[in-house]
Amino acid sequence: MDGKRVATLTLDDGRSIELPIMSGTIGPDVIDIHELSKLGVFTYDPAFFSTASCTSEITYIDGDAGLLYYRGYPIEQLAKHSDFLEVCYLLLNGELPDAAQKAEFGAKVASHTMVHDQMARFFTGFRRDAHPMAVMVGVVGALSAFYHDSLDITNPQHREISALRLLAKVPTIAAMAHKYHTGFPFMYPKNKFSYVENFMYMMFATPAEDYVPNPVLVRALERIFILHADHEQNASTSTVRLAGSSGANPFACIASGIAALWGPAHGGANEAALKMLEEIGDVSRVKDYVQGVKDKKYRLMGFGHRVYKNMDTRASVMRETCHEVLQELGLANDRLFKLAMELEQIALSDPYFIERKLYPNVDFYSGIVLRALGIPTNMFTVIFAVGRTIGWISQWNEMIADKGQKIGRPRQLYLGAKRRDYPVREPR
Ligand code: CMC
Image: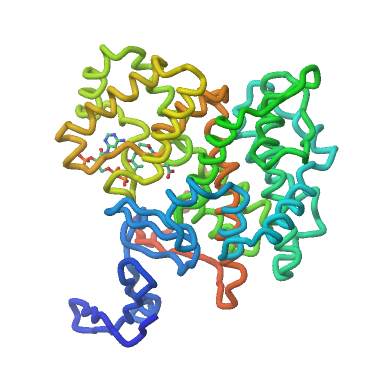
């Protein structure tokens, strides 16, 4: 980083301050404003349009060019050549594993896939029709009540065990949430399967039948997990970092990330996008629906992104996966897929979307793939959470390992009442 370049800020009363300009490895420069409070003023940037909240070595996005790198590796290369556990190792440790490291990491994760048996009883406290994301927030948070022996966040070994536990147990909990909702028995993990096969087994197998994972579908889910694994300082990751900055344990922090992910502007978009396609129902209604979007009656779910102002690389990979999966399942003429293609076509050529740089995002296509895999709509955001868990853990770990880390504490511009006296009333 280069601390010598400065930006000078002069207030209207003549006071001024020199603010260091920081440069990253790639990407825009950042003005370090943390000394600004010495002048008795703060910056105002609601929704963080112009604010870098931390330094990080994990993920890089260039939204204008549509680029996404994990630890320097382009996402499309990882999606093509890597598998999810390798990507997890990369995000967590900074480098790709060699064969021995990969095998050791896989074995460690596999040794943590079961949850404390008492957790099964925890589920019965939820209504059967509870949204699986509500169950995820509760049960993942409850991990901190079951694994007391890895909660010392100052201890690197505890942090490592907690990371492995989260990575291994979140899919188990996700599958349990699905089974509880549908009334089928929980399936214990089977470690002969790969990470993704095992998740599909816990989701779809029953004790009554043998289960043989379909490699094309496994690969598709593997890609969904890889594409969702991290996305720098988005709403849920920032929530995890802020919760973690107070010293809260990692299980509680990841539960807070799951809560933030749930919203339709973030991880809930894949569920909302599919519901939207179902609501449109037929290709003949696409034009009218798009008109409603332009009239600001509603938004086109699965379109637009705070950072990407170009086609998101993840969306291109997911679009390709979508074709592969539908082909494999003989669903190339799928009604919703055709409708999605028509919608994409119209939106991409319409000035409303072109002027605002609104492109389909990864969740526009991932919903169609997940539906084809047989995953119910209410589980879509849960699948996102399973994939994103490694990103949250890696970002949390990076923050805690930073010796200069302090509790996050934004300030505000107060617009409420000025000081006033309580109106003491005479007794009647
Ligand atoms: N449909 C129609 N108009 C839109 C959309 C959309 N999906 N997204 C943004 N706009 C319009 C918005 O109305 C505004 O227009 P105007 O300038 O006339 O007021 C302009 O584009 C800028 O919108 P914004 O709300 O200021 O943009 P933002 O950066 O705050 O919002 C977003 C980003 C992702 C929340 C938004 O694009 C959106 O709501 N998209 C739909 C939900 C969605 O697909 N979210 C998933 C994001 S990808 C998964 C993830 O990373 O979590």
